Length: 262
Image 1 (cartoon, rainbow, N blue to C red):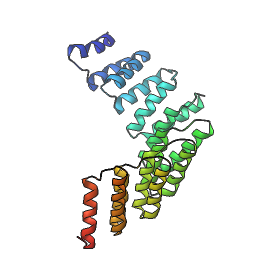
Image 2: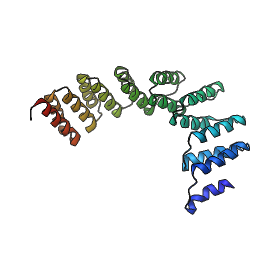
Image 3: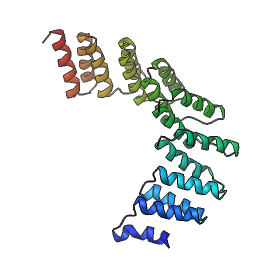
């Protein structure tokens, strides 16, 4: 009955809210109608309202209570929810459960957990999981590399981040945005020579540094007072067909003012 009503509500100009869906989900789980509970949950994920921590736990408890055999899709759905809500221990426990049950892990499931670890600053755990993924033959994608690279740079581990970019290039990936993240990381460390080398390396590899990448480099040189280099880079941007934006010009003006060269 509710399934038909749920589908009909948008046509009538009404949208079911989280409170209503949560109550129905709870009812399904209580009465052992796990198939219907999972179907409702999937509809919430695709059409809204988006599940919260309460609804994720309701479904998980219902599945466990009824001894429901979860498949990869169900596990992935729950792991994604727990990661998004910062419940990484629960997400990790589900991955361990998948392994114990002999359910094949996929790149989406593990990738979700890697992203969760990275966003929570748990870089070592993310690195370990990536190593495990590779050891069982999973092919890393740009999303996983990106999550790990951002986390490494955020923690100041730019050398490791550089190794990761090199690995990406070696397997044929063109990590344009990743180079920009790495440039920013070296600039924050004050390693301006290295940051500049990376930008020129991008050009050599046929990648296209954008305004943000160049502006990051300009800002780095302005901060260390190397205004000639900052100015040269701004000119280089123009020669490559890039237009310095107001942020770039503000950096240059601020740098020259601090040097007393206006």
